[in-house]
Length: 221
Image 1 (tube, helix red, strand yellow):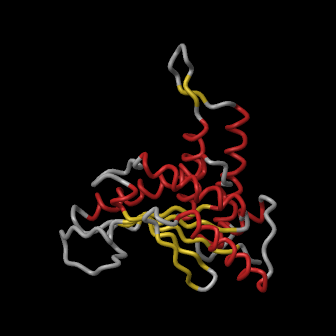
Image 2 (tube, helix red, strand yellow; image 1 turned 90 degrees about the horizontal axis):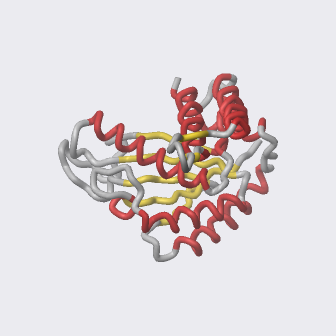
Image 3 (tube, rainbow, N blue to C red; image 1 turned 30 degrees about the horizontal axis):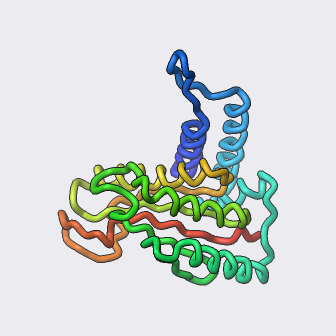
């Protein structure tokens, strides 16, 4: 069910990104060509989710391969991620976004106070160029699976925190997709207060726990 929901969310984000407003009627419109492309992309993602019994990352890999993206050989994955990591470190230096490496995965940590206003899911406009830089690198490395995870601290209710974390992750994904990145590559998840970096009690404000993380993994067979 979570995988099907992820595919539906992806479709909603793409449609929202591709809509335009008529200058005279002020109606929001989506072209038939765009609708067809979105339906095809979401269908591919849904098929990947439904025909795979492992996690969402494998479903995304299936969807990417189904869309014609070739997988990396195991020996090539490390070098591929090394180059991507180096470019991300160069692009994101001084932005407040940390770049760390765990095996063949790259983790971008985006602190909540840099990316969003307090309690808000709206991206800070000052952060747009940072996400644009991330998208530039992702476009150069199309064989990368992109997990975007939203997290909060324990202040506020669990339900509110879950919704906030999901909306924040969605908005980061939406912006990056709008820069021309294939939507099949994305897995977007809100974890609320369930994955704290700094363990705290309930009702505790903690800036370290308020974050969006982007996990990048190589597409391997």
